[in-house]
Each structure stands twice: as structure tokens, then as C-alpha cells.
Amino acid sequence: MTKSAPALIAVAGILALVCAIFAIRLAGPWKLMDLDQERPVQYAMDVYLHDRWIVQTDSTGDIASKPPIYPWLVAIGAHALGGVSRLAVYLPTALGIAGSGVVILLLGRSVFGLWPGVFGALAFTCSTYSFKMVHLARTDPLFCMWVALASACAWLAWQARATRHPPTRWIIGFWAFATLATLTKGPLGVVIAALGLLAIFWERKTARAEPPDDAPGEPPVARRRILWTTLAGAAGLVLIASLWLFAAYAIEGRAVVDKMLGRELIGHAMRSDSGDPPLIGFWKTWVYFLSRYLPWSIIAFIAVARVVLRPSADDRARRFERFCACWLMGGLIMFSVFPHQRPDLLLPLIPAGALLVGRQIDGWLQPRPRARWLATGAIVAVAFAAVFSIYHVAETRENPAPPGASPTRWDKIVRTREMREFAAEISARDLPNLHFAGGPLALQIFLGVKKPLLSIDQAREILAAPGPAYIVVGSPDALREGLTLRVVLSHTGVRDERLYVITND
Image (cartoon, rainbow, N blue to C red; front, side, top):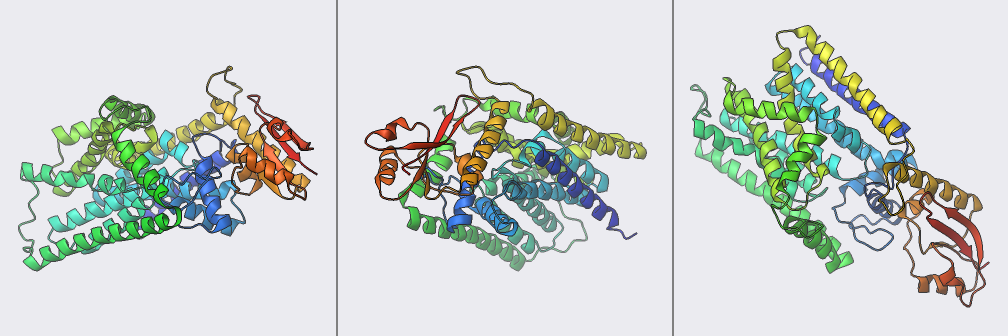
């Protein structure tokens, strides 16, 4: 067996684990109408059906709030799979979780050893964050993967510089992955990916970052090359992002700037959705991390305390511990300052916590090598039991919300199923000239179309024109005045949601 064979086996095991979790999620009920997943899927349909690769809109005409890499990947998968199916929608998110897990494994192995890397990858993939994100039509999993890759390059560049080796290729890699992160969710990825480099100042303060005595000195030409490579990478990110933004502006006008920069970037940095200024809910970030990442969050905080109080005697391991601690704690502090707080936003910090957790768990089990295998088996078994019980038992148990209350997860599962069935009824009728003046976005997704939602006046004009037309509407009464209409299909949902397909034929 070659020296790299155990690492390859571990990578294959992590990929198989993510595939198994993904399969369990796919086998469960679809909650497309939960957590604002309909809009990202409609953006992907805009790419797939209408070739709008630069900037996308949903059926209401609202512009996408994020850059287009996730819709691009879904559209590419849809072309390969023959349509915007459930598999096409969630393959990019599964890729993000699997890729992040592999980065954690290989990065942990390169510094701490194979088993700490394995436990770190398990602490990421076998968490409620991964269980949720592997099957969620959002940009967060891909963003997490790009940030993890950029952070890995940042660490390798620092490590190369500390040992007087050229870090140029790692600097290029950092900016390449930071650009992908920016085109996935925005420029915050650059900041998160660079947080670990705060450990450089930590090392300098303790005077323990000196290169080996036999390491050659760094010539001035090497320092200039590093500087120019860094500036060129930053300029490349700004240029690529600006070209895309200018192209989007040329298509949609000022609405792109108002939505993506004004409301999403600056707006979320200055005010929460409820209007709170920064620092009002600083404690939420810490509660989110502690509660949503259990039990690993407790071990992560223990590991951070150990890094501060008892740093490793090995220079390389100590630097990496501090790199991960700065990545995690710096990110938590940063997000606690921002007024816009959501548990999913913390996902790109989880790889840092997972690396520290892997190191800590292996330190506890190191005197008992067999316990490592038992711990691995136990973690995987508990993960399978947890993901099955959450998404196949707990959320499918009938639990309707009382009148006037927010819909429960069960309500959203049922609504998704109802829209899928109603779409199948409409498709079976093969209705020509079908338009939409109502109904959720999920209905169009299941019909495989993406059409603008019409106003009542626009719907009346279509129905008054010669030739048969069919309109999906929430209430036909507003369209009946002066027109002879017929109800072709009707639907009453779990929360008394009513939809009708009417025609002038």
C-alpha cells in the first residue's frame, strides 16, 4: 500500500458518507416551499429556459439577490439530466458539502495527521448544518466550499512564507477561489477566507514564528513577487466581479445595484430585516453556533481554549491551530457585529471549527488507537439515525399550524406535495396558452415553466383576446366581469389555499 493510499481511502469514505446522507434526504419528502428555495430554483430556470446567464429574475420580476454561480450549476445539471429536476437542483449543494468535507480532511491530514483530518471531516459532514445544507437550494454550501479552499490556500501561502519557500501559486489559488466565492454570494468570502491570517500577528507577538535556522533568507525580489502577485490577484477579482456587475447593469439597469449592493450588501451590514442597527443582537451569533452545531460546538470551544492556554510545541501545528482559531473566532465576532443574523450564515466558519474538533478528538483518543475506529463507527451510525429521524420521522409527523399561525414544516411539505400533484393535473390536460396570475412559484417549477405573474388587468386582456387562453389564478371573481369564463381545474390546499385554472374557451 502506497503512502497516500490511506488518505485516498479516507477521501472515498467521506464522499460515500455525503452521498449516503444526500440519498436519505432525496428519499424523504421535498420541502421546496420552505426556507425561500423557490426563488433560487426559478433563477436557475431563467438560465435553463431563457438563456439569461448574466442576471436572472423570478416570475414576479424581482432580480436575483446573489451572483449567478449557483443558478449556472443547476442549469448545467438540468441540461445534462433533461430538466430542472430535484436532483439537478440539489447536486450543487451536495457538491459544496462534499467538497468542504474533503478540504477539511486533506488540510487536517497535512498538518495534524490522517486521523485528526478524518475526525474533522466527520465533525463537518455529520452535523445538522450539513444534514440541512446538502439538500437546500441556496448558495451557502457552494460558498462554504470556495471559502474553505481559499482559506486552505491562505494557510499554505503563510506556511510557505514561514519556511522561506515561494508562496506565489498559493496566493494565486487564494484569489481564484475568493473570486468564485464572490461570484457565488458576494465579497464577504474574501474577508472570511483571510481571517485565519490574523494568526500571523498572534505568532509575532509570541515570537515563535521565526523560520528554521538553516532556511535561506528571503531575497527582496521574492518579496516584490509576493506583493505583485497579491495585487494582481486582488485586481483580477475586482475586474471579473466588475465586468459581471456592469453586464448585469446593462441588462437590468439600476435595479441590479439597488438589489445586490444597496439592499443585500450595504443594507444587511447596516440594518436587520426588522430595522435593528449593528450590535443589537450580537449574542444571537454565539447562540446559533453553540446550538446548531451541537455537540461539536462544545468541543470546538474547548479546542480554542486549549490553543490559547496550551499551544502546541510544534511550530507548524501551533501556527495551524491558531490559524483555525482566528478563522472561527474572528468570524463569530464579525457576524455578531452585523445586524443581519441567520444561522446559515455561519456555515463558512464550520470548517475551522471542525478542524479544531478533529484535532481535539484525536488527542483524546490517541492513547487508544482502536477507539478511533469505534468512534468513527459511532459517529457515522448516529449521523444516519439523526438524519433519518429528522427528515423521515419528525418532519413528516402530522403537525398542522393553527389558524393564523406561521406554517409548520409539515405544512410546507404538504403544500409542496400538493403543488406537485396540481401541476401533474394541469400537465395531463395539456393546456395551450397557459398563463399565471396567481399561485406559488413552486407550481411553475413543477410544470417546468418560468413565466411572469400577470396582473389582473393583464390577465383580463389575454382572456378577452381571440383564441383560447388558460389562466392560473387565486380567485376567478375579479376576472369574470364582462367575460364568459369556465373553471377547468380547482385546488384547495392544506391551509385553505385556493387555486383555479380558468379559460375563455
